Amino acid sequence: MYVVKVPGINGLGKTKGCENSGNEILKELKNIHTNEQGRIVDVSLLDLEEIHLDNSNLELTNSLIYKNSLEMFETKPKVVFLGGDHSISYSTVKAFLKLNPSSGLIIFDSHADLMPTLPSPVHEDWLRTLLEKGILDPERVLIVGLQNIDEEERKFLDEYKIKTFLAKDIFSGSCQDVCDSVMEIARNWNNLYVSVDIDAVDPAFAPAVAYPEPGGFSSRELLYFLQRLTSLKNFKAADIVEVIPKKDVNEITVKLAAKILSELM
Image: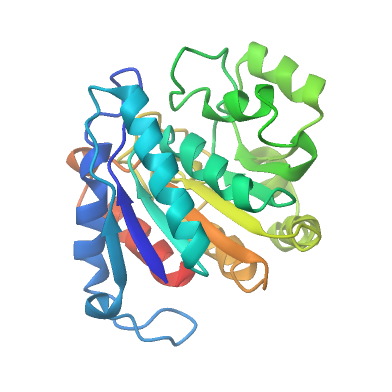
């Protein structure tokens, strides 16, 4: 597994601190000896890389993330990116789709990230930018765990017919049944990229985020979805974003991100 730190932030000033999460996640990963699949977790054996960025130059930041991600996808069978905020996914997903045009994207997020686009993709519009530019086929994207949706985003979801599972729909029925549906969609794509915004998790389990939304996944529920998705042969890439260590409580958000990383391995 190739693990890449991407300390990029473009969150309108609200995600400052996310650039430090990669180091904190890897530090906490050292306390995990085996993942739940029984695989040994040894940080010293990981293939680690960092994309060095200057967040004051957003055009250069996006270019560096894209170019470096493209090189990694050309040579590595599986890659996990540690953000940074969700704006990094614009460039990593763009690179992934350049080499894997028939692939799909599953996003775990309480927010749709489909706000009207700005000159440089931010954490609130990165997905809309990919769709409006024709880089991502709307039929090959699925958002899981949505809660707080702006009216403008709702119109966009309807117009582009984007598949979603709202948090209320997941937890009003059977979590297993919804996961079965997610798996059925995912296995029909050529390759799979999974993006994990940690704010999909209820702030009781992950408080260190810019926009906490009560009513999200428990840690166990999100892990269940991810463990099943990573069992698919077409799973090739993932990112973990939006962790703000300085806002954490007893490191529980960082610990969860580290556990997620261990399960993706």
